[in-house]
Length: 403
Ligand code: CS2
Ligand code: MG
Image: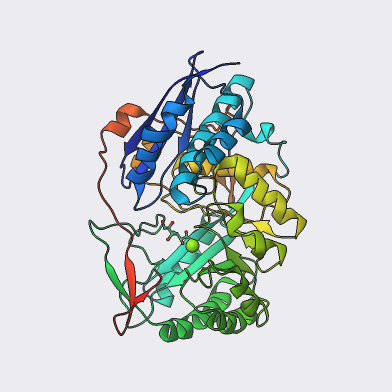
């Protein structure tokens, strides 16, 4: 079995920051994993180079589960986004290596394809409802079967989910956190109007999604979900912060609008109650922030028992390496729901050449051995790290809210 002989991190910023782990075996086979944690990139980089890489050298690259257990249990300090993103990067890189040695795409190692492709959703957004609907029509023209709708709230500059670029979403864009203003009352008035107008303009054959971005209380989320029911949204995402999983019971008592949650979760323990009590319909944990393919499979298998489907996070701040890994995963699990797909810039795609491709609203990971994505280190070196923070949100009286 090929031993790990070298590993290193590569930090690059082709339009935004990405941290990548590259592992090499004694046979010269290399594998890569995404370790990007938006706004906290160098914490994961240092966790990997200072604490994880020295423990990897000499280990058998094929022993993916054992290495996962070694890094998780061996740290003593369990869970959390920094630890779990670092473990995820190792895990992805080892699946990549195993696939390359086997001559098979990773989805074949995970059990083979359960579907012909992966339905994805893109972000249609704009400062006004008209702009959002125009963007949604553009997504429809590109073949998307599922579209997320976000719009600016009148009187509140800098609403989350509204971006300058139409195909990319980049909220981490300042050297220190930007301050934005929030009013749940104003927001809750505009979203039902957006969805009503969207059904008139776009029809009923397209799935429409919406992200609340942890902004509401449970009872407010119940109200918004009820107001949206006539427009049959595919889901409302992150209705309320999820540290208190039991809080979702209150939302469930008031609305049949499906709920998606989990883009900031780092382990199965963050969603165990949500899944077992069927308090959510879609689990959005990702391969990069929730411990890699090895751990995400366990979350998906638990979800399968309770009729919960997956809807993995796939914003622009997850690198093409994480996107490729997500697609292999999505193709191979029975309870896949939808995959978020925010495109990367041309600079990012040039740094990470990849085999996955988009057609008719679906992505396919391709059939290259391993994950099917590489890193061009010379191109990466041309884009040095730049500190960039996500914004913060304050209510109109100046008190802190959840961004
Ligand atoms: C968003 C994210 O894609 C989503 O659903 O909630 O874009 C999120 O804001 C960023 O990934 C934060 O890094
Ligand atoms: Mg979200």
